[in-house]
Image (tube, rainbow, N blue to C red; front, side):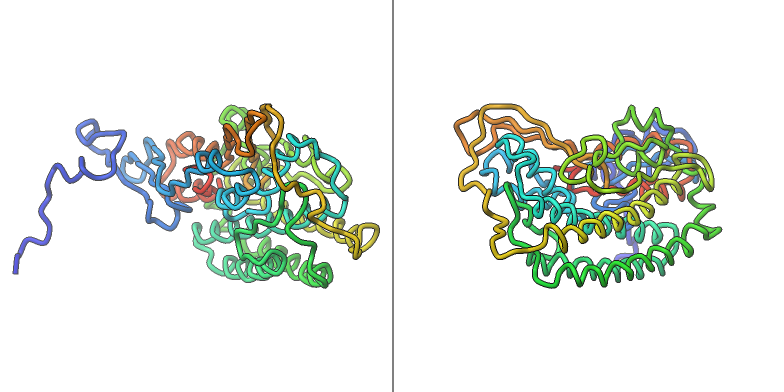
Length: 404
């Protein structure tokens, strides 16, 4: 038996994943640490090249390129309607929201904006807000795991399963739905869907209340997140941050209000922002708090949609959710950009068409997680290694729309 279990070879480091920094460039007390891509607290297949001085972080370099979605190149070889299943796989935690954004972009090119039946619009908003809660539940629950709280994760995933079952009942798929179509919907709500959702809403409300008590008021959680990873508002704007990351820094910027798309102008809801209640405005605690509050506001929106869907826009035998779905999508030659408020921030689609083909000439995605990942080196520099995990979790990254 060979007594040497491991033999160090200098070229091993050079032949592994490429790094920005070299060993010979380090000072005497510094180390290069690879955090991820297998590490559970990196929230996806992300590798961080960390330069540390003991527990003190000097530099952080994110390394991308592990999912290889190639979404934009796939989209430039497919008809518009066949792109929707690929859109689902960008932010796979919030596929309904992503579909809504993409479909609105194509409908703008076809001059269908504002011309769809109100029932379709209310259903789109209903399922988008339901998916927003499911996405935030993953973000809040896994953030608790990062900090060391296990019970909230179980509670939130339990209720998320109920939401996933509702969306599966609706579309036939558990996470990647292909439900929101250009010009309409795949199908109307199943009979009894509205009533079942009305039964589920009080359960979700109670879970949110329990999580707030168990997490937000927990002294350990406060010490791990309050005053940690503070993102000043001017820095958030300069880095292109949107969604809860931007609102956590105090700016009430929400595209559901700013762009007033679909039926959101007809609905009442508040825009939660970070207020520095436990530490500083824009810290990790604020970003997590904004997501919890957004879940409560999404419930308000859903309740208003259900009132309309069971009242003036209730189902009829004549209603056809595919009545305006075009058989062939061939827009005029133009450039268009449409954005929507996804759970993680602004998701935008830039599309260029030549007027002859039913395949986009160019399709570019403005992915919110890409911008939020770019701010990580700014937030992590000068913090402790344990705080780096808290900062990553507070950004709620999904790598499907980063490596796209």
